[in-house]
Length: 521
Image (cartoon, rainbow, N blue to C red; front, side):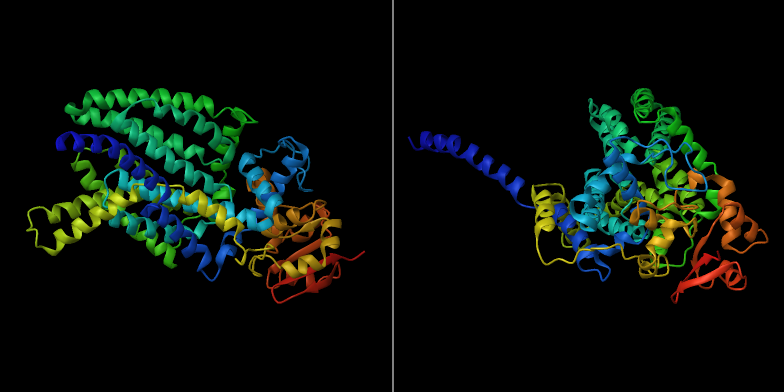
């Protein structure tokens, strides 16, 4: 009888206990959920810059304005409406969907909505990156350190701009590719709809095709060099080729079709952009963030040797290609760190495990290994904590949110601009691309000589822009050719000094950083 009672009790209580554990997993935050919270607190709530750090680049305002134009017109623009130097020409708003998202966030909650959206995307991609590294088998504590190093280095380009969506989607795509190698199934085909979304969010979808091609080639190489891996690697290579073809066709589902791809290719081949746009220049290792990037760069290159020794070619190809790309253009540094961080974490974990093997249970290293193992297990779960926290953060009163776009005065003289909005919008204005971005956002009537859409203006207008700003020998004739009658430039710029010495221009106003001129009537 007692035995029968015990069996009944097990049958009754087991489902209840299992259900309780399931609810606990859903309701109680895991360590990775708390990592999401930590990123938000560390980067935005406890930082002196706060949420304002996401608004350091005036490109954000231009993206919002383009998104507002799409929302108000109900159509995606194909013709430029912002410039007087190249009016009415074909223009590709190739980041239209992310611009709509930024504009919708701004229309709903002002700059609070913009920075909240951008901050959540950053925290989500970093949390996903950490969970991915642990899922691959990395020690949780090691992965945490590597991801935090990557986060610090990546802050150089943490701005509320469309490229953040590429960071999130690329992390997810890498996880899907690795899951396919381990478990197979149909999940790999979710990359097709993901590509459609990605193509309309940001031009960074191109890097996914590069990494996919390298993975396909790496699988073929692994099959060639190691016969015992040949059947499964050849199968994967063929599958990736089919997926790549399907994703390539899916990327044509955008407002411009194949012309979008040709436009991106033309942008990447532009010598003017590569030589004059800071994001495309080689990195300068003179800041704390770039020192961390250098550390991860060296770590990634060191991992290449051990990866090849353990019959891996895909990851070395990724690391070597992205290392080269990031050394030629700083904008690729974030992609390198995203791809390399899980690989470095896994390799460092293997070295750590090797150091622990064979030691006694009383060893300090073994104790640390057990402790970090428990830490890793608690990083794997997830719950409703993250969406709940986002809702609470959005509604919680008393937090300091940016109400205006307050860029550094060295970049945009907000007070001077606001004081003379009518003059700036009524004339043919020459100013920096950053100021032009803000003015397009600030005044719907504003027309500019050039803005941050450098791929639209091309080399000729780009060179004329540099010639005027630098006070070259053609500065006066160029101003006359474009019929420029308003000039806003830095106080110590060559063009400012020249304008002060000629009777053609009148100084309207100035501050410590900038001077505003109007052509004498």
